[in-house]
Length: 400
Image (cartoon, rainbow, N blue to C red):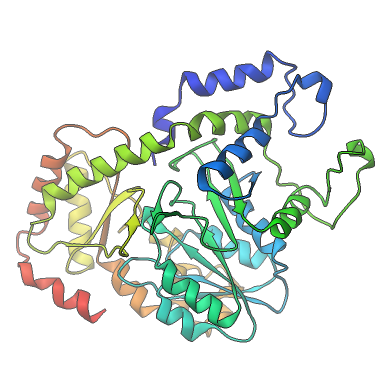
């Protein structure tokens, strides 16, 4: 979560460069005035190069990136899109805004999409699958991609928490036909608000680029006000100020992820041997961004005790156990489309996911870590789990 922790002179210099060369804040046109400064275009190219994709398309948010990806794939009324029951509400919102039916599948011990349950939920109406790398741990992409390939379904990766991570050496966001990124203020790389679609499919990129810009084809032979149109669309264009900040932030990405991983490991090494604690499952070959340290305790009561003890020691938790109302589909009764798709009762629709989430605790990880934080974490969790024996968790992990 620490992009904002490193906001400083580099970002300011990129912004100042805009104002020193024409002060054009719109990403298109005004070529003479802007004196060669195209920050959004440069940010897109730099991100595509970083991830090894052919194309990047900067947009206004991670939510917008999902909506644009679905539009580029032709998702619409009558289609179903499957995602996971543990994700931020925006993933399902984008599906609903596409006029498709949202279907949520269970998560497994990775706290990401369960490939077996995904396979059970695919129907002839399924048009796409959105796999999310929650809190920086890769989903089981090998198995998920195999299910999608078997059924001829497009895979989109919601990489809001996964930028800088990889599986089998392949960057997250590049496994599916499209990957979406988020640059909101709490993400690993931030532009305040912003997002990006990345893809190796030139057709997907062209459709996405047009749709996010009212259908503009941006024909270089025509002035923008005479431009040709490829389709209808919307306005999800990123502005130059956000692009400038993104350029500077991207140069810091590797250092951010390296620091997060070191601090996650320091916290884990301090608590891993405590009775009652078990690690989150991680796919073989995964390189995590370590946005958070996630572990399981025996039950929901223990998770709440852990949170209270951590807060009392000046530490924090992140989403788990306290904020699942924004991140668990079982709580989203305000979405009638989702309620209908799951038989009218979300409270009992995802029992496997509820069991995993009920026993999970997540500690945020950043670029900085107080020297005594690992020791405080150990003291806090020792207090919270004093009555728990080592064998209390493992049988539950095997049974879930």
